[in-house]
Picture 1 (tube, rainbow, N blue to C red):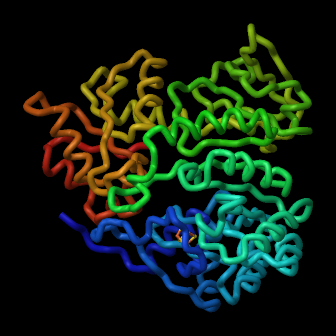
Picture 2 (tube, rainbow, N blue to C red):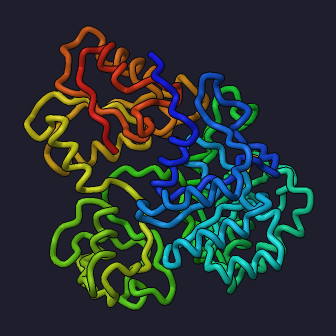
Amino acid sequence: MKSDTPSLEALLYQAMKRGILPITSLCIANCAFCSNRYNPPSCEVLDIGRRSLEEIKDSLPWLQAAPGPIVIGESITRINEGEPLSHPDFMEIVRLVREAYPDRDIKVTTNGMLLTSEMVDFLSDARVGLTVSLNSVSKRQVVMGDRDPEKTLAAIASLRGKVEFDGSIVALPFLTGYPDIERSVRFLKDSGATTVRLLLPGFSSRHPLYKAMPKDTWDRVREMATGLASRVKIPVLADPPELMDLDARVEFVLPNSPAARAGLLAGDHIVKVAGKDVFSRKDAFQRVYERENPVVTVFREGLIEFRVSKKRGASPGFITYEDLDPVEYLNWERASGVSKGRDAVVLTSRPAKKLIEAALKRRGLEARVVTVRSYFFGGNIQVAGLLTVRDFLAAYRRAFRGGDKPYSVTLPARAFDNWGRDLEGVHFRAFSQETGVPVILAG
Ligand code: SF4
């Protein structure tokens, strides 16, 4: 069932085509929540050690095709990302990237332990933005193995006014206490962070913290994110959120932004942009983003219209959670046969199920949407990107034992790499071979 493993060079090429520049897998932290040691043995995640400056330089043209920012140090590919600032040639790498791409946004993810005043000045001059994994303001030693947390915190605080950055916190209230989360958010705000992401921890069944985490942690942290945003006055987004509908709710309005000047408020629901109904949060944001001075109609105890004065392609300055892309969704409706009334089955993660059902309801269509449990990782792992063909087959067999074969089965595209392989190296076609039902990848 397993298909050939792509070469390291092919994996790097695919990552860089998406704007991600891996430079090292070496890490200087020792995070209590780290999953690296607890992956199932057949999980394909690659360690690249430390890439040489020459090799990185030669591969920089691969970043040309990426539409968004260039990101260094982000673990969203199958390559383990370490601490980028620990690479001895980090500054030279950034200089080369800046030289090759003078107008692109460059973003570096760091745990902050190696930030020095020289580094802060360098990042400021090179116009590099950061994502700072703070995780805890009072227990960094316990949570990350930070030997000198006071020094790290002082370095993070020195970013204010010099380097644009977002903060992230893996929420571990059962280790740090809930008050530490609030203190951490306040610290990030005072240090000049633009937004804060509260990451809900996902542990495989092998991870020692899985059993230590109370079941209500995710619900409590999600609730906390909403309260903190209004109390601390900084966008605080839970990740993954629990979105039950496609309503384009504004979570936060950045001060002095076009949206703030127009009068939009957190809690407003955007229902139209330029007079046309919006389909989803993503649709609402994209349409405001793309237009010049768009008229935005919101629901706030009745319908109100605002003109948001901004340039085409400029950020409006309001924040929503990310949900469904309307174009991708409509393409899926056609491909799956749903729009022609065919019997379509969607196998997906728990967080995505409600959204897909909401989209179908909005369009007056029907499909069978089934939540897939992760047997491969176990624990509380839910996200679609970590599901495998084995998980999809188990869910399908459980839900459709002995019934008629559907017209199509949709699987989440993010569970597969560019070669159609899941985290065990199994191709999605194996699902069709086992069930005899055509597979569509979407989302
Ligand atoms: S920084 Fe990332 S790779 Fe390093 S220990 Fe922490 S979670 Fe693991």
